[in-house]
Length: 269
Length: 361
Image (tube, rainbow over all chains, first blue to last red; front, side, top):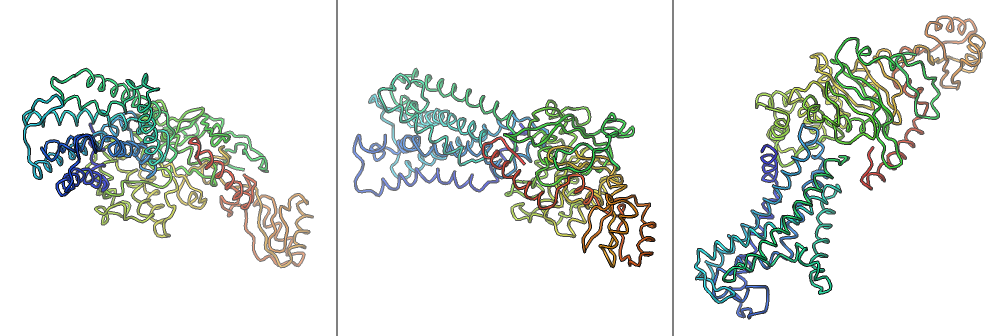
C-alpha cells in the first residue's frame, strides 16, 4: 500500500499528468463542438464509428470518442505512460535513489504498473464523462438505438458505455504492460514507448491481412472493437469474455516478464 | 611500508607488494574486536570485456570513517552499487552486519543510508517531501527528524523549495540528508564534496567527521586524497578494480620513500648523495627536483654531507610529510597523464558497454 501511495503522490506532482488528462478531456468537447458547428453532418458508414449518430443523440459522443481514440491516441498514451515507469526514473536517476531503500523490486514495479494503468483509466474516464457532458449539452440525450434496432434507456445506455470504457481499459492495460516490460530493458523512456507503439502497430497490421486470420483470435489489438457487442440485443457476451481472456493472458505474461527482468536488472543509471 | 598492500592489477606497478599481514588476518582481527559493519568477500563484477571489480576483500569496522580511494575508473562506483544492491556481483558477496547482499538486500538496506553518483530526487517536490517519501521507505520518519537533517546539511531555510531549483551543491547536501534521515548504522557517500564550493566542502567534511565522532560508520568514496587524510581513520586504495592497499590512514604513507631535496646545485648534490647511499638510491634527479630513496632517519646525515661539500640545502621534504598522493602514485606507478589516458579509455569502454545495457564505470 505504501508503494501505491508513493507512486500516486509522484504522479500527482507531475505537471505532465494534468497536461495528458486535460488533452484527453478536451478531445470529446472538440469533437462535439466541431460536429455541432459543421454544416455537413457525416453520413452513415462514413467517418469513425458512431459519428453519424451523434447529431441525433448526444449519448453517442462518448462511444464515438472511444472508438476514435482506441486505435491510436489511447495506445499512444498507454505506451508513453508505461514506457516511463522504469526507464523514465532511470533517466532522471531517481530509480537508484528509490532502490537504495529497503523496498522490494517486485513491489515497486507492480505499484508502478498499477498506477500507470490507473492513470490511463482516469484519462479514459475523463473522455467518457467529457463526452457524455458534451453530447448532452450540444445535442441532448434520448434513449439509444442499438445495432439490433432496439432501444436502451438513458441509464442503461450510460451503464453500458461505462462498461465499454472498462473493457477498453483492460485492453489498454495490455499496452501499458508491454511498455513496462520494455521499460525494464532500457534506460530510455522514449525507446520503450516507441518500441511499444511499433509492436502495437505491427500487431494491428497483422490483423488486417486475411493470411494471418489464424492469429487474429490471439492478437489483443484485434479485440479493440469487441466492446461494440454491448450495443447489440441480446448482448453476445462470448466475444467480450474472450477479449477479456486474451487481454488478461497478455497482461499476466508481460507483467511477469517485466518483474523477472526488473528483479535481475543492474541499475546503472 | 605501512598498510596492507595487495598486488596492484597494473602491470606497471613498481612497488613491491609487501606481505599483506592485515589482508590475511580475519576481518574481526582487522577491526580489533569492533563489530564489522561492512565487508566484501571476493567481490567481483564483470561487464562486457571489462572486469570492473576484481575479487575485492575489504572490511569496515563499527565507528570507522572509511576512505574508499581510487582514480576515476578504479571500480569505486561499481563497488558501491554492489554494496547497495543496485547491481549484482558476478562473483562474491557483500555483508552488511548480519545480512548478505544481494540475497538479503532488504534486511541489509534497513541499516544503510547513502547515495551513489550524483544524488537524484523528484524535482517537482520540495526537499521536505522528498525526505518524507524516501524516509518512510526505511521506516517511520517524523517531521522533527526531517527538520533536523535539513538543518544538519544547511538546508533548513530551503526545505520547502522545489528540488528542481536546487544547485548541484544543494543536491549533494540533500543527498546526505536523505542518507541520514533514518539514522542508519552505515552511511555510504559517493564523492559527497563533488561540485561543492570550498565552504561547502569544509562543511561536509566537518559533518562527516562529526558523524564519525558520534559513532556512525561512514564509507566515504573519494578521489581527493587529502580529503581522506583529513576525514578518515581507515582507508583502502583501489586501482583497476583491485585493492592496492588498506589500513589505518596514519599508516598509509611510505616509511621509507623518496625524500625531496632542493639545493643550490642539484647535479652535484645527486653525486654526493649517490656516493653516500649508492646510485640506486637516487630516484629522480633533475634541475628542479632531487628525490632520494632512504629512511627519514638518514636526513641529518645527508644534509651534513651536502653542506660539507659546499652545497646549500634550500629545502628537504621527508617522506613522512609527503601525502597519500605521492604514495598512491608510487603504488600504482602511473603518471598523471597515463592515468588520465587509461581512465579515459576505461570510461570509453564502459560507455560502450553501458550502451549495450551491460556496463558501468
